[in-house]
Amino acid sequence: MKAFARRLARVTGHPISTTGTPNFIVVVASEDDRVDALTHAAEKVAGVSPSSLRAMRNMRRDTYCAVAAYAAGDNPNVYTAAVAVIRSENPGLLRLSCIHEELAQGLGLANDSPAARPSIFNDDDEFALLTKHDELLLKMLYDKRLRPGMTAEQVNPITRIIARELTDGPV
Image (cartoon, rainbow, N blue to C red; front, side, top):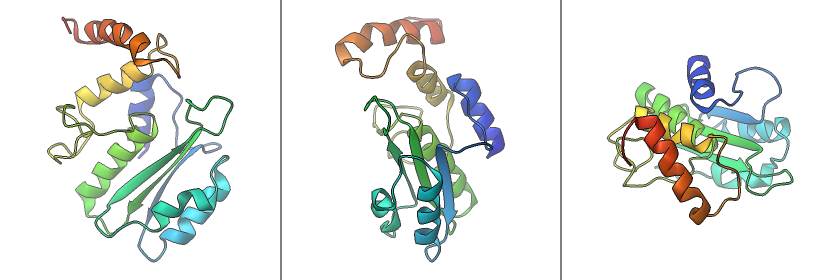
C-alpha cells in the first residue's frame, strides 16, 4: 500500500501518504466487520458521515469493492475526502486490483468507460492493475492547467495539448 501511495503521489504531483491526518481511508474488512470498520472510518474523516456510507455497509455480495468520494469544502467540484471498502475475503490479486482501482477513482477518475484502454477503468476486467495509460489519465487530471468546475468546452482543447505533451505525438 505504501509503494502504491508513493506511485500515486509521483504521478499526480499531489501529496499522498499512508500517515498523518487522513482524508482518504481504505477499509479492508470481512462481511462481519465491515459495518463497524466503516463507522470507525467515518469518525476519522472530516465530511464523512456514517449515513453517507450506507451503500457500502450494504454492499451486494457480487460487489468486491467500492469507493465514495466527498466534496465537503467550499467548492462542490473538489473532493475533500474519500472512503474505500474492500472485502478481505477477496483473493490476493482481486484485493490488489481493488486497491488500485478504488484509490485511483477516489482521486477523481470516478467513471469507468469501455473506451478507456488499456485501463482498469473499464468493466471488461482485462486489466487488474493501474496501467501506464491510467497514469497518464491521472497526470492529466492533476495538471495545473485544469481547474475544478471547468466545462467540457473549456477542458477539451487543454486536454488535447496535455495528451500530446505526455505522449510526444498527435492526439
